[in-house]
Structures are given as structure tokens and as C-alpha cells.
Image (cartoon, rainbow, N blue to C red; front, top):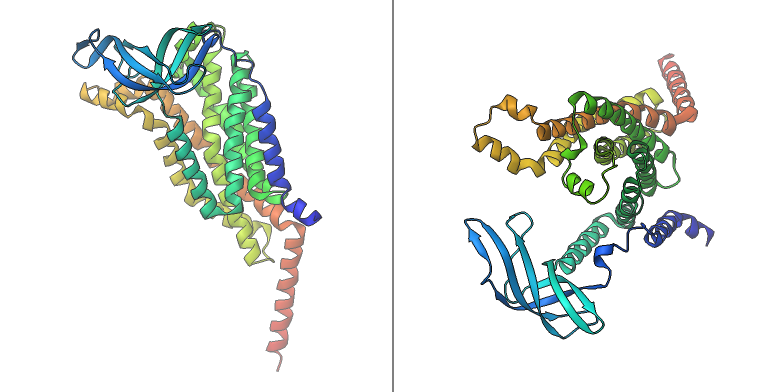
Length: 394
């Protein structure tokens, strides 16, 4: 019974932490704009575009929809909803009969005052996609798949329940980001290895990379003269009553938070490789084990830096296409604030990866072999010399 409890202790701790984070309030649950409203899904029965004005690709005005409310206090009733069009392809949406939308119903008593159509309803499809991912992960990884799911959920909850509210309250983004990153790094690697020296080895390597990324990121964000408003929706945040937020420091914290996942990945890869070498060759010394880990790190660093480049630049394909379509010179493109910010993210994150590899190889070699491994290696060498000496005698 005790052995089974010890084996499951990691998963039990993860589940307990998930429950605590789920119960933890953010302090921003009761937004003023949603008080006195009912947020439910509704089915579009018919549409009216008579007041919609089209000008090429841009549409403005209002689209009216006849709706059947599918949930909440007005479930089963039919009413008219309005879809406000602002002339933005990015944020506007058009509905057709048969669509299911997420709507916000303003009411007074039992009377519906207005229905604003928020967006197409996607929560059911998101749930299906998430369940497919969980099933595939558990199918291939077994028990470790469950731990991967736990780490995924804990990361989401930590960012939503702790990191974002702390930033909104004006907590120093650099220190807060470092603490959250340290917490998640150690926890996620702990969920992979459990109570083991491998957890210390991998965590120490990853955290060194985080510190290096933080320092270089802060220095070169100032050197590049990049303002945090380069982040999407940052201006909207300022205009929402948070004009005292330091967006530049939030941008700095985003650099090492964004790169921490790749650094964790590399540190775990190197630690697992070193551990595998030691398992196959128990008498290996720490120098040889660290050298093996470094060889793995060299092979992985090239792909990891490319991973960061693709991850950061993937969302800016349309921007790059616009520059090319306009015939913008390459030196102008590289000097633009948005492009410079992505270059900063990628190169600074790569600095962290390059730091992670040798340090993780070293800590893994020392911690996983230890003095016992070195002594065992010497004993084996002496035994081999004695045997070879006896064999050489006539």
C-alpha cells in the first residue's frame, strides 16, 4: 500500500495543485460590462443584411439575426440578436441560418432588453480537440502521458490564475515572470522524473538558460529601443484603464517565458540521454558522461533554434508578405520595430539554449554518476589491468 502511494505521489500532488489553482480567484471574474447579462449559445434561424453596407472587402453596419436561445434562463425562446460590424476583417464575422453563436443577453426581470452576438460558438469543438489530444498522448505515453496532461493544465492555470492577474495589478513583470518560470520549470520536470536526481540536473540547466535569456533580453530590449506596445492588443489594454502598466517590462518577461519551453525540452533530452548512457555503462566517469550529454546538446541545438524561429515568426507571415508585396528593401524590413522584436525573441532565446546544453550536460554527468560512478570506473580499470597482466604471464 505504501509503495503504491509512493509511486502515485507525483500524480496526487499534481491533481491537488490543479484543484487549488482552479479554486483560486483571479479577482477579475465580475467584469462590470457583463453584470446583469446571460452568456449562452443560440441557434441562428434567419438573417437580415438590409442594413449592412459593403465596400469591397469591408462591411459595416448591423446584421440582424432571428435566434433560438439554447441555454440559460430564456432557453427555448426566440428573439432578435444584432451582430455589430466595424469594418475590420480581423474581428468581424457574418452568420448564416443554422450557425450556433455565443450571445450576451441583457435583461430586466423576465424581459430581454437586447442580444449582442459575440462570436461563433466553438467551445464544443475545442473540447473535442482537447480530448483527442489527451487520448493520443495517453495512448502513446501511458502513465507519463497523464503527467504530461497534468503539466499542460497546471501551466495554463498558473498563467491565467497567477501570472496575468499579477501583471494587471502592477507587480514587477520581470521578477514575477522569473518566479513563475522557475516554478513551472521545476514542477514540469518533476512531473517527468519524479523524486530523482534527474529532476535537479535538468532543472538547474534549464533555469540557467532562463536567467541568461532574462539578462540578455532586458539589455537588448533597451538597446533596440523597443516599446512594449509592439505586443498585440497592448494599446487596448492601456485604454481599458491600465495606463500605468509597464508594457516594455512585460515584453521583456515574455522573451524568457516564451523560450523556457524549448529550454526545458533540451535539458530533459540531455539529462535522459546521459542517464541512458550511465544505465548502459554503470562504471562511466562524470567527464565521459558529460561529454556524451554535450554531443546530444550539439545535435539538438540546431533544430531547437530553428524551432524558436518558426514559433515566433509564424504569426507574422502576413506582415512579411505585405512588405514583399510593397517592394520594401530588406534593410528596412529588418529595421522595423515588429521585425526587430521577433529577431530579439529568436536570438536571445537561442542564447539561452546554447547555455542550457553544456550546463545540463555537466550537472547530469556529475549528479547521475557521482563519486560512486567514478570509484566504480577506477575499480573496473584496475581489475582489467590485473587480468591483462596475469594473461601476459607465461
